[in-house]
Image 1 (tube, helix red, strand yellow):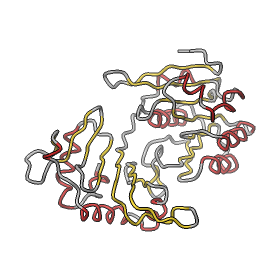
Image 2 (tube, one colour):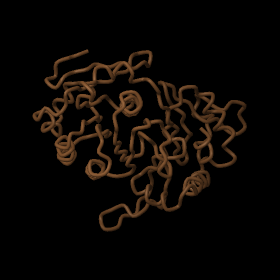
Image 3 (cartoon, rainbow, N blue to C red):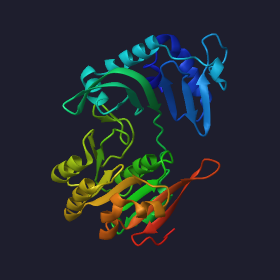
Image 4 (tube, rainbow, N blue to C red):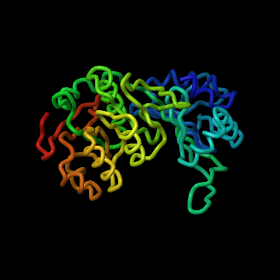
Length: 310
């Protein structure tokens, strides 16, 4: 977690470190100018305590530390130091990835130029998403995805925050290390391998090649031509452009492993942008991820005709 602590103002780092340890199930830290710093995860939300408090976290907003303008400025300064060029470029996309795989989303005042984001001179809000790889979480799932010496074209789906990306990452690792398949990962938003300076911070397997920060359509084309993968892994598929790129990959003999947002199989089937995918029968397996009342994850698997397999 050192990479996260280092972006906070010096006078807050000690308490941030204690707060991160005290929370126990931390998933994200929300920083907003003039507002309490919120530590959340595992259905638990708490606030960074005031400086004179003996505890690092509090449940009471009125006892929380509120981020000042100078705190935000100092945080942005520390963020930009890891690479000024990368910082400026990544800020145009609204996020950057820290060492350790943690992702920082930003919002605030944007300067537009020619209809595109030129830069973000007034960053005032940050969402720090804590990277926690769950090694082995997809092991039980893999037996249902295998198809001879390869896999079924597979789409993982769930509501936001359930763990699609986490399961996708572990599927990639297992296919690479244990199934012996060469995998090409198109990591458009640096969430899966979480590359920092081009180096994956998360374990995605020894036979996995990563293309980081490129659009899914362009990335799939590049990897097919250059890396000859057995499996193409892509997060958050959708739309006609993705469909065309995937079709090209299938013609080249690749299998597809991807994710999409949908709360249940009915919602997925009704998505207008998913119509082409459904009618063409690209996917042989649809995996719905769910979270139980105790926070544990489980899955339901459907075949290409929407029949439940498991």
